[in-house]
Image 1 (cartoon, rainbow, N blue to C red):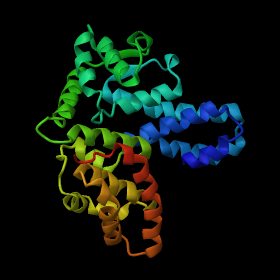
Image 2 (image 1 turned 45 degrees about the vertical axis):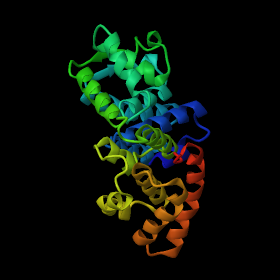
Image 3 (image 1 turned 30 degrees about the vertical axis):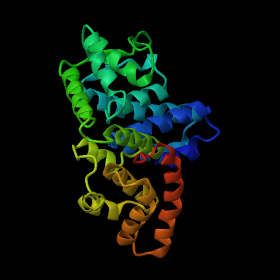
Image 4 (image 1 turned 90 degrees about the vertical axis):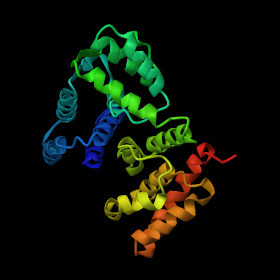
Length: 280
């Protein structure tokens, strides 16, 4: 649906508008907020009867309607007039609260606000690398349960970095970097980490746990999904390609599909190679 919108909006809007649309839809995808897509589908069908201004207004209205519904569930209200589309998308991504090397700083920031609005502003400022004063007008309302929940999640995230578990911090940082490269959908490895799966869980065990999902993902996503699980398992970087391709061949019968996965996997491993933890 987003691809169809791209065709419709091409040369009809400023590139920054399209970039904002894309960023917002990717952020909503990560939250699995997809109800708005039905309305976008209907809009696409009517697009030829609309002028550019109306098309853009309708598109943004639908997308922000979904953003508003999502934030309402979180008991958070923002003033969108104070934020551009990219910034709203970044805030939505923060609200996923995946394990992050800034979590300790964000947890410390929780004690710096006098109320929910100030506290959430302080936390956002950490992740967005922004001064709190630049965000304070954007955060309008925060439910009383929001900050305690965020605090609990951050504490849980930090528990993954227990010094007793060798290499956990490196693994979390690498998984975050990989997630950034993947973009839209949260990887199976990141989901497993969020749900409490231990770092260094055997790769084969992780694959078996997610076998049905891996069998159903498109070929062009299979490599990244397996790579995310391999990173969580702390598969030695030298063996990454061989270990992952072993399971690719177990999950796919078609040689062409296997080759397609391989061609996408190798560049991705190369992108991460400089960050991959090497045993000393």
